[in-house]
Length: 250
Image 1 (cartoon, rainbow, N blue to C red):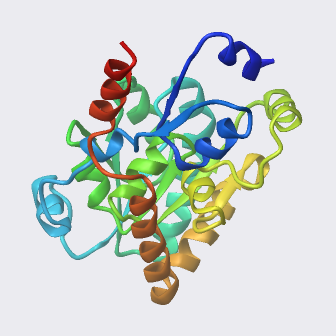
Image 2: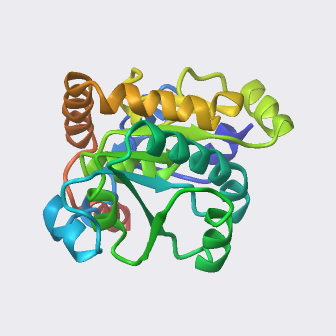
């Protein structure tokens, strides 16, 4: 299997996620936890209010970040549901605004075309990804690295995940895990909602979003848990530590 292939190839492992240490150590690997490289990359340059002003957003409106993923295939599946959720939220809370940091891998024109099908305004911003995310009071995030980036910026989120049914069934047969979001896996518990497959509907996403936005205590609890995630990811300098391990082996 995969483990045997790795065993036959590597002498030492430098891993970037805390739960990987036990996984590989149990299989007899020499494992070093070097911390996560995102700690060197994820930072905001402005306060929440300054960012909103910079990007032409209302400074005092509730702001929702929409992060539909970086691959066109996942955007195609998730974006309509995220926009349906946005429509519902706008009806429930008229003083709300939506912002979307444009991934380098996506064409702005294709996103704005999808947005135009819905009765909701979404400001698409290219570049400044982390400052755009930090604008948000809550983010709707496709499962993946973006969940970790959002967590490091201390923004509460709802994780959404939608793939073809066949791929999902095969994936569940291969890997049986309680959570799919990196944030929850690292925490060892569900700290932010995960809406998977049929649950990743506009109605359900909106319902979860409202339950967080209207419950200040729950929102603060999520923020507190996200701060703990940062602590579990080690210290900045992951690449340097990994390089040092390699140098020491020469």
